[in-house]
Image (tube, rainbow, N blue to C red; front, side, top):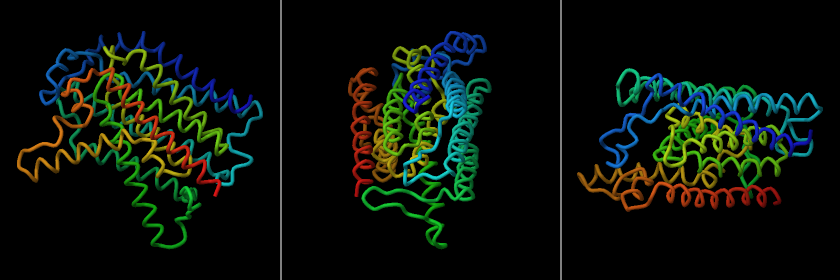
Length: 349
C-alpha cells in the first residue's frame, strides 16, 4: 500500500463510519433527550433549533479513531513506513506525536463531553464553570507539551528561517513551553468558537485537513497524512447531517475534539505557527470576540460588531447560514494555500 492509497482509505473509512453512525446515534440522542438548548443571547431565529440532538460529534470521533487505527496498522503491516525516508525535518520520534496528538484530541473531547452533559442533562446552560473547563483543558495541554519535551520533539520549522531547537538553554525552553501552551489552548478554543451555526466548523475544518494532507506530501510524513485524511473524512461525513438545516450539532464534545486534532496536526508538521494562516477563520472568530468584549468594556456598552463571534455579525447583516459557511470556507481555503506555499517555498531556501 502506498501513501496516497493509505490517505484515501483513511478518508473513505472515516467518512463512511461517520455518515452511517448518523442513522444510529441521532435517534439515540433523541431518545435520551440530548437536545440543544438555545441561549437567549443568541440570534432570535436560532430558537427554531431548540431540541436538535447535541453531542453529534461522537459520530466523527468514533469514525476518525477507527479509521486512523485501521489504516495506520494496515499500512504498517503491508510494509509501509509511517515516517518519511527523505524528510530532513522528521525523525523516528514523530510516531510519539501521532499517538500524543490523538490522545490530546480525545482529552479535549472528554472535557467537551462533560460540558455538554451538564448543559443538557443537569439543565445548567453554561455547562462546566470557566475554572473547571480551563483546568481540564490545561491538564490536557500540559500533558501534551510534557510529552513533546520528554520525547525531544522540541524543534520547530519556521519558513525562510529554518529549524529552531528550543532545548538550547533555559530561555529557549521557557519560550517553547509558553508558546506551546498558548498555541494549543488558543487554537482549540478558537475552533470551539467557530461552531456557532450549521455546518460552519465542519466545512472550515475540512479545508484545514486538505492543507495538512498537502503538507504531508511536501514533508513526506505519511502518518500525518493518514491523520489528516481521517479528519477530512470525518468532518465531511458529519456534514451530511450537520449542513443547514442541521439534524444534529457536534456540541463541545465535537468542537473541542476537532480543535485538538487541528493543533496536533500543527505540531505534527513541525510548524505550529503555520496554524495562523491555515486556520485564519479560527483566528478571526477569536479576535472578533476579543475586540467586541474589549471595546464594550472600554466604551461602556458600545459594540464594533452587531454580534460576536463574527459569523453572528454576518447573520445579523442578513446572510444565510449556508452563505456564511461557503464564504468562510473559501476565505480559510485561501489562508490554507498561503500556509502551504510558505512551507513549500520556505523549505526551498
